[in-house]
Image (cartoon, rainbow, N blue to C red):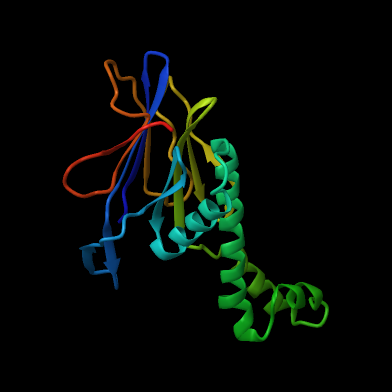
Length: 210
């Protein structure tokens, strides 16, 4: 089980975020080990995307968005929307590959041939498609001109969920996402605007504002 944690912090008038994710990988439901590849991906110079569930699919989604936004430093809301859209696209491709293609169908042929298909088969396939879970959850944390923000993206993708409440513990995202999202109020001098720990001994790695 992956654990991703994001915390909003306030040092006087300056916003901060601390994020942590483990490196544990499970194979076959009973083999566990710590992988060398972190479950974090820089979405921008001041944003981190963390992956829970299928690490390969989640990392690919995060990398695709990071590459598309590499030449800019957009607001965190824009990054979250891009992650959700990419998630939705990945899910749709998986639905087509796993459910429709084994039956010699794709999205266009399935929705264009309802009249010619057996109604029971149409209902069965439609239920399978609606219930399909990509098995990935994303937690995005970052800073922009409006402050610090935390978003979660879970199956089936959009809409992305914002978790910026400061006066009470924030509710976890729906589904089976393994996220801890919590507001913190800290006093004193914080070492960096965005700090992240990757699950290895040594704690957090400070990342300074650019």
